[in-house]
Image (cartoon, rainbow, N blue to C red; front, side, top):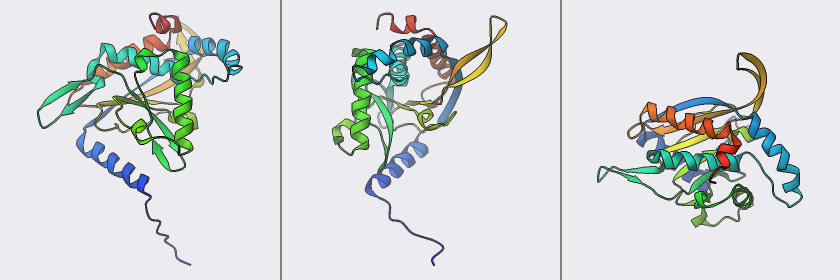
Amino acid sequence: EERIERIPLTRIRKTIAEQMKISRFTIPHTTAMDEIDITKLYEFRKKYKEKLKEENIHLTFLPFIVKAVVRVLKQLPEFNSSLDEEREELMLKHYYHIGIATDTDRGLMVPVLRDADKKSIIEIAKEIEDLSSRAKENKIELHELRGSTFSITNYGSIGGHFGIPIINYPESAILGVGRIVKKPIVKDDEIVIARVLPLSLSYDHRIIDGASGARFLNLLKELLEDPDLLLLKS
């Protein structure tokens, strides 16, 4: 019996490997991490989840995160950009196409939620479910995997906590979303049990400084900890 088995890489695995290599060796990655108390958001979603389920709408936390991310990208546009190394220019993108990393039997795919800033929480929820389902069923079109300006990877859906996500080149940043856990926190000088969401933000250190990385997570925290603020003007 052979002790080593050689398995040829599939075409999609070769593509993933090449993309990861380009990203890792081209972009100097830095990752900032934080934990967010989303107890209010947890209760808000719980209030409407079953009602929406009756309408065949699967409301996860991801649409809220997408909505919050877009709000932050509008305040910190360098996170929604690409670096043109040849012309030595930063290309700020005034549209918001969010890549949703999806685990499939064929490997990692990143279908794109286009113009996320123009869509409601419900519309985002429907589209994410559609894109993810078709990606897993190998029914996604090639053009639906291109053109993202910022990506989100939700490894929390399979139990991950913190991670160091690799930027989806040529984007400038990616947000990693961990598993929500119940844990004690100090609030108003009292210990309370909260629903806590771990986040990891990787960004291109050539164009984004550490202070901006902290600002991004602080703004995101502000929105996700207060659903009323998040949905205001949405």
